[in-house]
Image 1 (cartoon, helix red, strand yellow):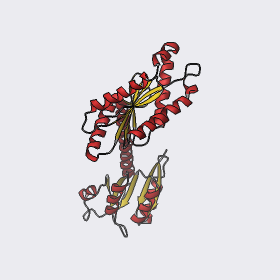
Image 2: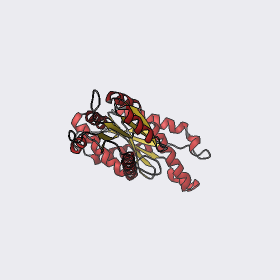
Image 3: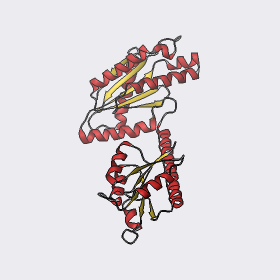
Image 4: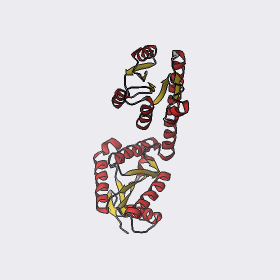
Length: 299
């Protein structure tokens, strides 16, 4: 896939010559006569590098550079033949990534452009790798949900947010009923498939503000910010209903898969451990009452 390059110069001889020189398989070169025209182009198109003259009618190349760097993930190479009027330092201060003197030596321009794009690709790959590593450190690889380490960190943040704004906060604790029986009868690979499927079911029921976690084994939890306990119970019942309806997708030949779900809400000025303990108690209440149900325990 070729990289888009935009050449901005009001001298059509230079503009067209640069475009023609850069018409190579690795680049798709576009042209603009003014900075205003270039900015309109950038609104609709992704451009890897803008190559611009400094002297333009209307907005000059330095101001264009400053605007591009503020609004877009795009590199800028500045060209000028007026070295006495515009310094390298001034161009860099405006955000330019490279500075090329006129008359342009095309081979030099191509080498600078190639190096700049290569560096951008490498940085993008590094950034993506860092994001993937970060995601792996907080994600349960079997279910795709967050892991328990991230749960406690996020719950602390939500409790702090509650303390500042006094917004409601609820918590679900979810356990698969008789999961050991499934594992013993069908083996751990099938047990893992159940866990993975349930992770998907939980994810489908989340709002954008909610977050779900696998605590370990067959236990899951969901943090529900901005949610009163009655709405949290409704969310738990929706999840339970969806899992019951999807039972054939879990293990068709087994007993129906059921959940015990405990629901609680944050109590004023209590600690994280108190909230977690109460949610866990609510879940065990659901099991003691016969499983396959939702149990609410308030502070």
